[in-house]
Image (cartoon, rainbow, N blue to C red; front, top):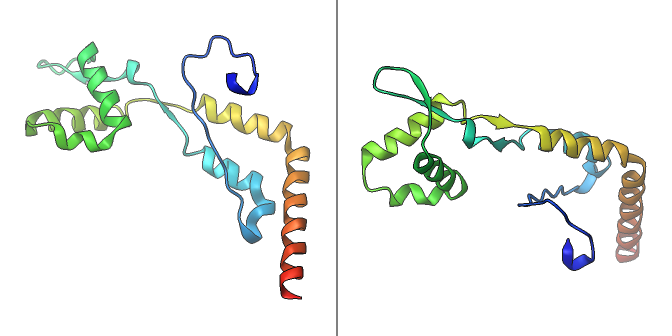
Length: 141
């Protein structure tokens, strides 16, 4: 964003979502966007908990949060855990935390912005589909 000349303040990290509209369903982009965004949920690792030896639910320590973050961001790292008991521990943490707490605030915000810009985005999609059909007619004939 900075390289495009946009002033960015207070942003520590970015997540980018892209939606592809294809073929005959392109005009249903808002419906498809909603479906896609329903799957976009940010893990809230800082809220994850585990059970101690007495069965009490307690917060994860910093090392456990870091390990959980690594495993969720890079699933291939599971193969680098040497101990089966460690793998079991983190699988249990994930299972007990219903996917370790999920936040869909960003998905809701993104969908709200799509609804606000619906008219402009509809026009963009229609324009693209028109050009596509024009090119198809030219190729066919």
